[in-house]
Length: 451
Image (cartoon, rainbow, N blue to C red; front, side, top):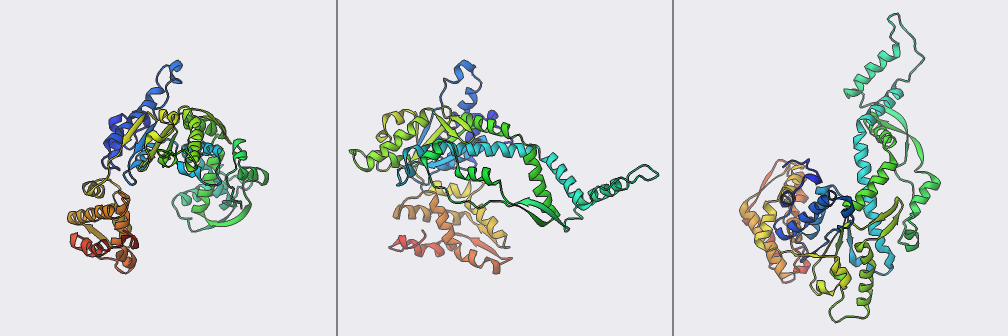
């Protein structure tokens, strides 16, 4: 399947196929998010008088930790090239937060959206920006003097610049130093903690400081020509990009294509039979989130943003609470509910074998940088999956995340001594895995170990 597929060209079946490359199983959840994504494309093509009436069908993903809830949402947003923000709903119950802080998730979404558009625009003008950067470097190397015309009629300096340009493009000048004026990457700032009053006004203290004192101190630096070319190219790209378009398009994409992932939503649900203390606080957070999910306006530093068509995907384990413990109004705003399957040994084995970014692939690539070759046999992967599943049963079940801790424990000695093992090849078979991990697994106190 082409990597260049755009959001409008994805059918639900194609979306699921793309998600299958990274996430094992969870077919019901994949189908639900695929339909939700395709409906956004459909909505933009219905008659305008009906378009605003079609609200997104928000989704709640229900399942234990480590089964792929966050990964499904993150991959979906990446697939659509849509602005995406992940927020832990439980943070709004912490001391120091007030209800209006829930608006910060929308501000973060707009910031992400504007950055996506800005990056796209800079990429679009980069060829021209690089041409301008090249001219600036040539001006440093060979400033233009007053033309002295030869008998042939061609200025001497133009012939010299053409020769210098050819050398520059051929990389023959890469070792040469030039002096440039460049801004410091970041001006000193102080940490700004949440302040509902400032956020309501759509202000940001660091932005105010930048406006008062400028974007940063400019100083003369001596750098190699490749670094100077990169600095000049970025500077010229910023000049070529239309900031008004970036802001307008960023807001539009946040409103039309934005996705907010509300993790740990079960942590703000009322416990059955509750009604005092923490339950009151949790219900208050739900009521603060409700207007954003229903559709409201939020003031940001880029302008007013409506959330009517932002897609919300919530997720939670719901071990000690149920979806029905959420306030009815919020439940109604999440009409699609999908239960994800717990992961056992067969699923963990598939996770090690099928995704293109599977852990064995990652660790092979990491250790190959040291000249160490890892060869995972199928029996070795089966033993890894078995031990990870057993550890999940005997200790807290953290799903596929257990594979990360198992791998770190398994390859700890190899990773430590890799610089001295250059050129070696190691076979990770069932016997190797069992010898490396079985003693830890058989310990009566698993909490003492990384497994």
